[in-house]
Length: 209
Image (cartoon, rainbow, N blue to C red; front, side, top):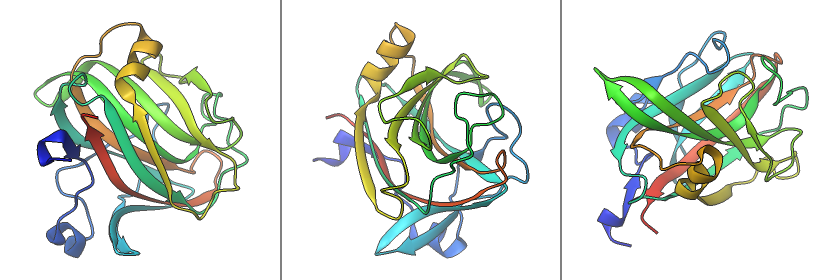
């Protein structure tokens, strides 16, 4: 695959590894409500990979990287992640009860002075109690659609790989062509259930094929 055929999201530099934090990413307070005691994910090297690491203990993180891409030109999203455990007390379909061990998000829309507006969000989540393949509207944000790609504790502690056609998923969920991709991000939080979870993310990438 040629370099122009993909757009890496988590291609962290040695400077970022030394600093321990991603450069140019933006934190978010939370979709349903403000995450308590928000933390900044760290960049750590594990098993030879530079990874984005979140250690949530009654707190969490949502982090986005600004992107400006045509979703029709880069219709595929791929990534790897590993979680330490699931959060059985989470109630994904209830407002205020939706903790996730891991999620990868794509935000589509327009920005003015770096502020997004007229946006829509696809969130690919690691489910706690919902089966893989489940799709539903975020319980408190109609502009966000949830897609469960992994479920249950049986694969906790393992590196898992995914590739989805986010362009087709957007068409299916929102019924129209997506606007530009403006952010790609991650979410791990355990503040609503007062739980604990660790998550590692790597190789998040937008692909032409």
